[in-house]
Amino acid sequence: MTVRPRTTRNLAWFISIILVLAGGFAFFLQGSRHEAANLPPLPVLVLDEFATPIQEQIRAAWQAARQAPNDAVMNRRLGMTLHAYKLNTGAMVSYRRARLLDPGSYETAYYLGIVQLQGGNDSAALEQLRAVLELNPGYRPARLRVAELLMKTGELEEAGQLYTTLLDSPEDAARAHYGLGQIAFRGGDTETAITHYHQALQLFESFGPVHYALALAYRDEGETQAAGQHMAYYQQYRKNGPPYNDPLLEALEELDISTRAAINRARQLFESGRYPEAAQLLETAVSIDLQSVEVHMKLVRLYSLMGDFEQLEQHYRAVVSLDPDLPAVHLLYGQALGDTGRYEQAIDSLRKVLETEPAHVQANTYLGQACEELGRNNEALQHYRLAVAGEPDNRFVNYLLGRRLLADGQTAEATGHLEQATGPEDEQTVFYLYHTAIALDAADRREQARPYLQRAREVAVAGGHQQLLGDIIRTQAQWQEPVPH
Image 1 (cartoon, rainbow, N blue to C red):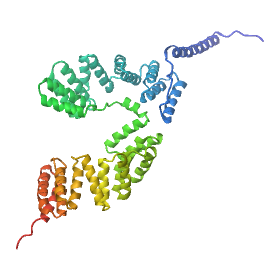
Image 2 (cartoon, rainbow, N blue to C red):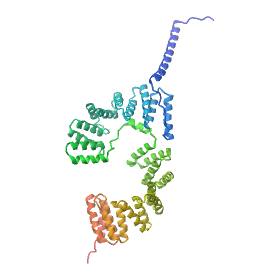
Image 3 (cartoon, helix red, strand yellow):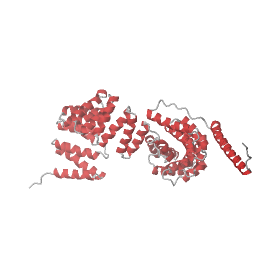
Image 4 (spheres, helix red, strand yellow):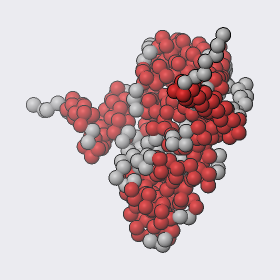
């Protein structure tokens, strides 16, 4: 066979193909060398402490990163999953891999900065968070974090500039005012500091660190009363602060399917009155961890408030199977039984509380009420006495004991407990005054009841209790002496 020489055009085409293929082959070799030379190896997983669903979640993220080792998103996702469960060493490794693969991702830089900050490496965190602002100057959470770090390192001028840019952000303004107040205070301008602190409290009243800062500022001004007041608020709100409005951290938190995370989210829903959503979240959590007494207990409390006795009873049984001697669950169940009129069953459940805590005030109180409903007045009196012995200043149990003594004809002793219930004067006083008057009247002590009813009227007028005021006025009208003919 004769071999013909290639034409110049065909030869050029052939050479170009070879070069392209060689270049591509070199590219893949380069990528492989890049990973081997620069990327740290994937983190080693030790997951024994986690529930099975969490282990499966973490392993799935690790496998995805292993199958696509040069995929920055997969590496960042692994870092986030580990970070969500506070496996910060592995998270840091994964974020670094993602940063090397995609240096332009502000999200990865932010997550790396946060995990470094949580690990106490402020200088490394500041470097990463500054990089976030270069990549995305509009991401306010990074601006706030950088300002806070600059405060720690004493770079007050730059920190103040960043805080000032956050004053027009409703989510960040309270922390910005707090930061500016700290800067002013360090600079000796206590008056300006106090102004900023109060502006922070107008936006978030229970901001604990701000109350502490105000206490120090007022102390320096010689205003000891104001200093003492804010120090007391600090003790009350020590750990309180406005939430960080941080979409990236919210995305991180959503990855956490642990029982603890579910409880925290349910608490937020509960506090905003979203009971069904809180219950649904806790039901999901308990399906993952059937042995969690804490979640079952929270569901017992929640269903009690929602009036769902069937669901409450289901979780009560679950708790008892796990911890049969837990007083709190028998108390809640007994109260719920009483609320539904099942007094004999309520008494049985409440007595289980007293087996471990004989002086339990709430259990004795509920037992007294249940016994009264069944006409077992001597037993009711006994439990009310135990409740008052446990909490002598408890107005409600003093009222219950006084009313019971009054019905039994023990007027002198009853009056002492009723007086204890009607003071000191606050929002509840008017109700105790009114019901004490009604109880005295029911015991044929109307003349003794009249002063209580008149005091109730005066307190109702002063406190604006319009509905109760109407009841008081109608009662007084019914008690008027007949007009003589």
